Image (tube, rainbow, N blue to C red):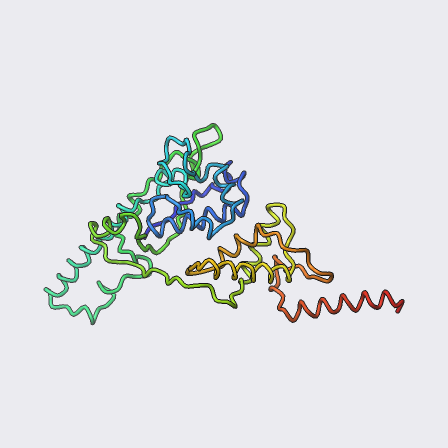
Amino acid sequence: MPFFVVDDAADLHPKMVRASNAAIGLWTRVGSYVARQLTDGYVPGEIAKMYGSAPQIKKLVAVRLWHEHGHTCPRCPEVRPGDYYMHDYRKSGNPSRAEVLARRERAAAKKARQRAAQTGSGVDSAENPSSFGEESSGNRDGFDDETDANQDQDSGDFAGHGDVSPEDSPGTSRARVPLHSTPLLKEGAKEREESAGSSARAPEPALSLIPADWEPSDDDVRAAQLARIDSGREQLTADQVDAVTRKFVRRQLDDGKTAAAWGGRWRQWAETERPEQPAAGGVVVPFAGGAQQTKGQQQRAGLAALRERLQEGSGA
């Protein structure tokens, strides 16, 4: 199966140190997507915006962990406007799409020969399913034993994502995150997959209009609040979250937008939205620990604040 390679000393690399933890989280998450979808290091712009915020993307480009259109890195390919590329993706030991598909094809042929040998020897594979039946969870993509041998263990770029400079030094080993691969079908990928003999395809996610009663998850709200803090904006109150959500849903319905999921788009909207100031007694939605307040909790908090003000005015 394909892996997204992360050097075991990446935490000390100057680029990692300069980037925020939130940006590194985006880099890692998108890296797993790139490895799974076999994009050879290219990051679609819509995926970057769905998984992370604009400040996080800007930070990765600034420290040169990602490249955007018009970059000047001589080691990395050009990028289409709006998309990104993970610096030194192939030089860091990540397998290419062609290598992964070729290995799958070799593994499938090897398994077919083994099954044919089983049949010829009169052994019923149904009685011995572990011999050449379903692949184990550790080899679902049909990778043979030469997987590790094809990895470049001596790449000279520390963490696999640094520029040539005195700051950079080679790492000692690489920790790899296993990911089950599904080919990415876009811009000629279908033809390449057919020529490589691959038959595994993931169903495209269904696109639909946003439900009129759609609400963000607790994780969506926390992510938006943290992003607002990172960019110097105030947190949203519970009332403001409701108002932002209603406005977001109306806009998506008015524009006839369709999507498989809406959390990422809502977070991006909420991170930069300038809502009206909350009424007195408004409660800020928690972003670290605890669940988002329900409407009933918000109303009770507002009534409690109103009672306190009335009691102070009457001198009680």
